[in-house]
Amino acid sequence: MTEKNPAKSDQIYLSLRRAIVRLEMEPGSAILEKDICARFDVSRTPVREALQRLAEEDLVNIHPHSGTWVSRISFKVAEEGFILRRALEIESVRKAAERIGEDDIADLKDIIARMRRILEENRLEDYLEEDDAFHATIARVSGYPRIWRFITLAKVHLDRMRQLSAPVPGHLADVTEQHAAIATSLERRNAMQAELAMRIHLDSSFGVMAGMYSDKQALFTDDMEITIALRPGASAPKGRSA
Image 1: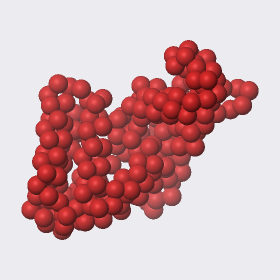
Image 2: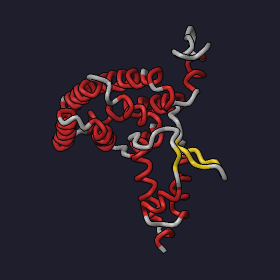
Image 3: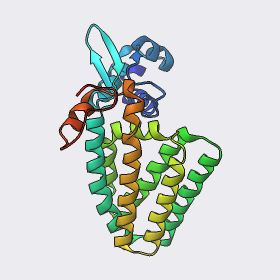
Image 4: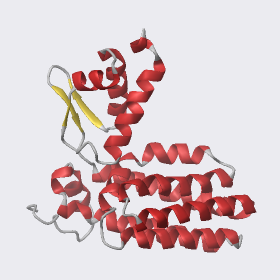
C-alpha cells in the first residue's frame, strides 16, 4: 500500500521540513494530521513517521492525545548550531583552498550570480537554498563532503533564524558580497584569506540573526533569556524582567 512506501514518508518529511525552515509554517502553529493525509493522499502512518523525524530535529512538538505544533525557534540551539557550523566551515574552506579547480570556481561564481538575480527579483524566500548550495560546494571541494551533512543537522534552528533575517534591509546584499570575497580568496588559493573571509561572513550574519529575537519574541522559546543571563555583565533581553 502507498502508506507503507518509505518514499512517501520521505516526501512528506522533506516537504514539511522545507516549509518549517522557510517559515511558511509559523513557529507555534498547529499541525493537523488529517490535513496532511488529505494533501498527500495517504493514511496517518507515513504522516506520523515524517512528524516523528521532525520531532527528532526539534522542529515539531508532539503531545500524545493533545496535538502537534511547529516548535518555536530555540536561540540556544541555534547558537550551538552556529558554533558547530563555524568550526567545521573554517576547516572546510581551508581545505578547499588547497584543492579547488577551475570548474569549482565557476560553480561558485554561478551560485553568486543566482543570488544576485534573486535579490534583483526580490525573491528573498529562495535565497537560503542558494546560500546552502554555495557552502555545500565548498564542503564538496574540501574533500570532506560529509561535513555538510553534519552542518545541515546542526543548523536547523539557525536556518529558521536565517530565513527570519532575510528581509533586513541590506543584509542579503552584504551576505552576497561576503560570498564573493570567499570565492575570490579560493580562486587565489589563499587559505588564510579564505578562512578570514569565512569568519567575517559567518560572524556578521549571526549578529544580524541574533538581533531578530527582540523584534520577533513570539516566534522564539524563552531559552535565550537563560543564555544571555549566563553571559558576564549581560542584562535581561528587551521586554523581559531580569
